[in-house]
Length: 211
Image 1 (cartoon, rainbow, N blue to C red):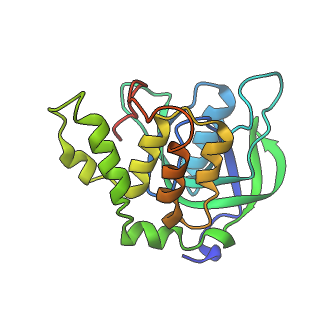
Image 2: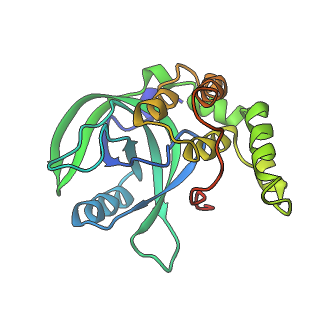
């Protein structure tokens, strides 16, 4: 994939969690007029949207955003929820400059040069064997009937996102995964973060939606 094939301006959707990485799919909600405009404009155009973590939760005004996020392709979600949409991660990007809003939603000029290998790595497959085994060890004692073929069918980045979702990571720690120089390094970085103070993930948070 070359930069010429990618949009240089992205509409921005702040999403604290779960983390959108290339090869993963996350839900977003168009539950405000500006985000309804965002999804309508995206679906009428190239369907790309930029997902970024806010640096802090809530507060007055627009939240500060991290400068590295993931560009994804937007599609409708479940028919019974007209405000839900799905975004499939394609490639990470870095913000060059934030642009004036359009229809109330934020936009930015972005570049992809640091992350051009992302789509190729996703296509080749990232096994992340250690993460899969960790997920198996955590799930099996509490849910022995779990169908592990689902786990085997997940992309490596999907397994990483699921584990990160169940850890009490700070936004900065989650962002470290987003900014890994290569997607290959996410497994080792996640294992390093999980070996720090505190217990391993207990899987007591709501599961990620099955997309």
